[in-house]
Length: 347
Image (cartoon, rainbow, N blue to C red):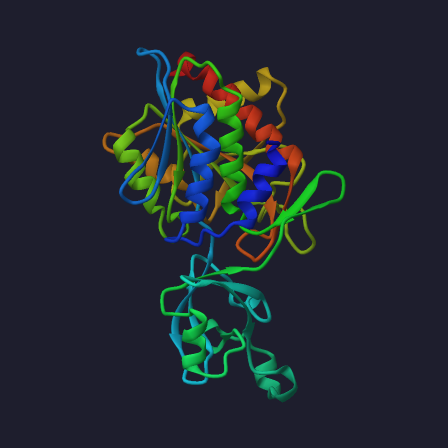
């Protein structure tokens, strides 16, 4: 299966944080041909193990399986679903979004509703409508009807966005944060038939709500090196200052120097840069981002794990749909492969 096809399948599937079952099944199926062993831990992380030489370093290659989304928290007597946000979502992007409520009886299509603009007062028009004032309309006639359709408190809600190829090398779709990291992880393992290092290819859960899965997985593995595959903000759009987000789409993967939770270990950063330059892989350096990744938790495991991040520049992350360059994904995979091959020289 081509990289673009893997990304499409992962992007279209649902995996709101804490409800990663569909993605987990796909990850197991796609990783299995290229690892020696695959297991699932108690929290739901997927860990594929590719065995290397006994005296070579162990590498934890991590990508998180979960996505931002919503969760049903109440069903009104009129049949509307009130919801909680799962992960960092800007209230401004919620209004009128098509969504899917994932119930035990199957998916229910719906829309995020609000007070119509025609009847808003002037002062109301100037304000962002908060999530607590929004609701999900699934077309139910009342509470019992909504429940009969299958809706219940705790159901995961994902955005109804389908993957599409646009332009020369760009794609758009749902949950590229971090399904593109998952796709890159799968492709990296496919391209490493023989390697000195033992690799723990890990799909983590609940990253969007506190890096929880990586914390547990890294404790079990306790690798010599940690590499997170994730996305970062592509700031090459109107209204974004270069000082705010200098990373650009189509300029190669970004290497985190420092973010809110991680200062990349010098050895790991040197490993990435040397591997990129030796193989003529374009890359960008990034520092000062307000967010962080699974690497920040991997780094603090037990006595410490030298860790770093290879990020794929993505436009509009943490919204219903994102856009990225397949060329950047390809170069991220090349860099991950080269870095893992070179790791024994540095650790």
